[in-house]
Length: 301
Image (tube, rainbow, N blue to C red; front, side):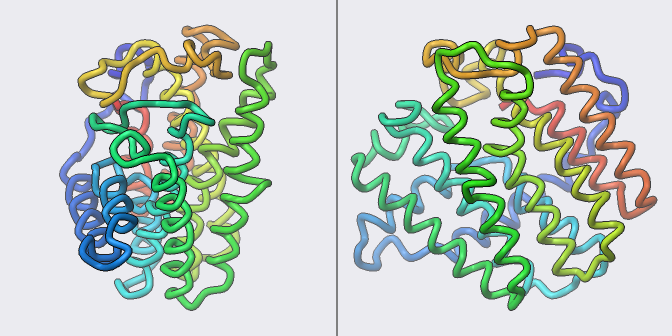
């Protein structure tokens, strides 16, 4: 999805991709460190966990947590690094379960066979469960019960799982814009918002700034999923790592399917612009928040 397609203003500014690449490589190394060894018994389960987590990805959620932590004065890697990885473990577990035959029944993820295709359905379920558990082990290392609670709320029945349930119930039905927004802000947006909140909380941010960061997270979280919907229609298979059009085939509830392509592009662009405006309230601290927002808007996979 390029800037011309989305017709955005602030989003068309150049991105310092080196910052994001540096952070992504840092996160990849940490994930490898915190995952169980592929040789440790039960090795099949551990290999499956590593297969999905280390398959690649944008690492947006851990990068958001680390950026918020560092922007507000946090400087202890032993506190933020496990929390950042916890977010990616949760995200990966949700993708593993989302790909299962009982859900979206997808065959490809990030350009390679989905976990249940590469191994089997039972192993995929257990690997997702194991990553869920490991995520809370990592979050607990921060010593912050508030951060653990933030993660639990973001992925519980009032967060990601609630959004997933609403998504399942909406398949094949006529859905209102409000229903679509509920699905997107819970299934995808809740964990994205929690990522930035968790990093900021660990840095001891004041409540006023935390509210602003929450609004920023809500904007990019909804924009992220709208752009996902658009990419499923118009994205390049080579860049996406999975076939396009799966949402339509599965009769999924999508933003463009409800309001049309043009309105979906416009709304995504507006959300990114609003997120960038919020980031500017933090002056120099907001530079990287603006960068991440533009990256979310311009991503092609």
